[in-house]
Each structure stands twice: as C-alpha cells, then as structure tokens.
Image 1: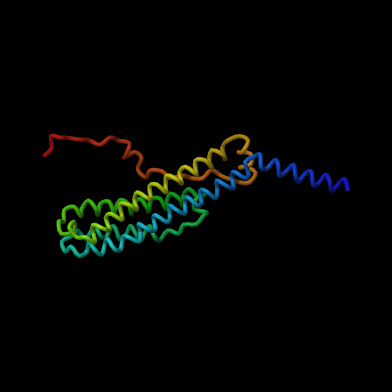
Image 2: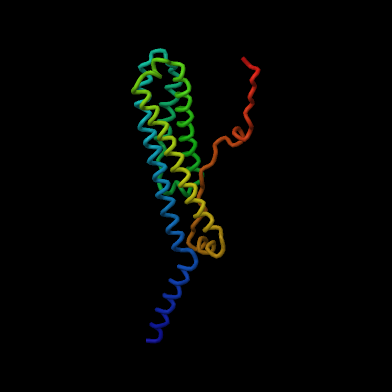
Length: 199
C-alpha cells in the first residue's frame, strides 16, 4: 500500500514538475507554429494558383516578352515541386530550399508586373487588372502570415533557449526552429544609388 502511494506521489510530482518546466508551453507553441506555417503555405498556394491565370492573360498580348513568362512558369513549377511536411520546419536545409524557391517565384512575378507596365493593351485588360489586384492582395497576405509565423517561432525559440525550460527542451529534443531569412542580405543591406543627373 505504501509503495503504491509512493508511486502515485512520484507520478504527481513528475506531472507538477513537467507543467512547471515548460513542457506544456512547448506543446502549445509547437502547435501554434505549425498552424502559422500552414497559413503561410495556404497563401503560397493561393499565389501559385493565380499564376496560370496571369500567364494565360498575358499570353494574349502578342508582343509580350516570352522570356519573362517562361521564368514565371519555371519558378512556379520549381516552387510547387518542393514537398513541405511538418519536418521541414525542423530542417534548416529543407526550409532554406523551400524559401529560396518561393523567393524565385516572387521575384519572377514582380518582374512580370514591371514588364507589363509597358503594354497599354494589357494594362487596360479588365481580367489582367483583376488578377493583378488579387496577386497584390495575396502578397500582402503572405507577408502577414509570415510575420505571424516569425512571431510564434520567436516565442518557441525563446522558450527553448531560456532557463529552466531549456532543460526540458534538451530532455525532450525540442530543437530551436529555423525562421525566415532574407535570401540576399548583402545585396539589400547596400543602399541603392540614386542619381538624378542621369537621363
């Protein structure tokens, strides 16, 4: 009887210890980061779904640069080919590869929008105009979703690195999660050169 009582007491002490050492917080923040990541993927999928309609509309403009369209189609295919699983969130190399592919697609779409400004018939096309508005809205949604993900990963990583919850992280193998990063940090940290004397 006393041995059973000691086992129950030890189990209760263990449960109390786990709740006080951040175990439940790890569970909550891990689920929040997965949910936030799912929303990022949802918005990337929305953008990817818009691309065929945009390309089809732009192809109607006979003189449009084929090279620009080809780059958009290739970037979409590359971004769509990368399979993302929950394990991707804990694998910095896979996460970086996915991020790079999405960055390429974003860049290709940006170039497409810039080039389309030179085509008055295309700019006047109601279908293209609607798609452009949808794409801009989707890019904004991607930014919001990524910001939410960044925040949840920050909270998770602070918990994983803070004492005493870092001990729980080590015991249960809760590694620090990778976060979004800028693809070409050196290029964007250099201020652009503005020369008003050029014609």
